[in-house]
Image (cartoon, rainbow, N blue to C red; front, side, top):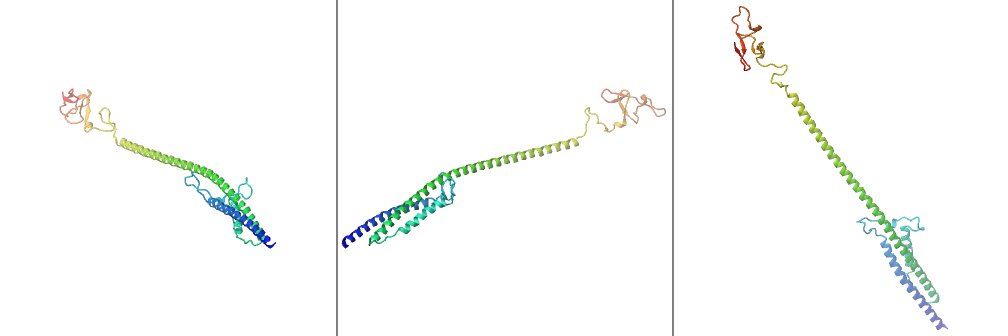
Length: 257
């Protein structure tokens, strides 16, 4: 009886250890996948965004369309919780009795269940992270387009202001040139003296010696005084000496009669 009982205990322990070994292998696989998912969720670089980066997944808020626990922090916490549980189950218990065999079997069952929960949490984390990246790419694409439009509008405004300043400077230069030309013209007009179009002296002016001559009735001129003076029809006053007659010489001058 004792030998048979011992053999049964050994058998149960072997079965229990086999289950624990399989559970431990599944736990290691789930742990590695979870670590990869957590590490991947820390990335902020997005494809085809010219260096633009996303916000951190851990800071992603919960979506109202998803159940509670859908924030980035919640997803990461779920993975970390299952990882901690697996670490507490990662032991190598002895099995020397049927009770030990039952405890090892329970440990194997718990390890397997925890590994499955960890795998599910890591999968949800990865899927949610990919959705997050897609949303971030859409957001950044829109922000890039808005930034480019703003830059183009700013450049156009700057160009328009520069052109307006250029035109204003040109208009001011033209105004100053016109003012200078007007000032020069005004000064020249003021300095110009009135001239007779017929060659005769301008009104108010005199010709040297002209006041000393008198026009005779027939159109010639003669001195107002002196021995050649002729006046009053060519007749001098009595007692003033001989009177000399002066007539036109046909060349614009005079000659004695």
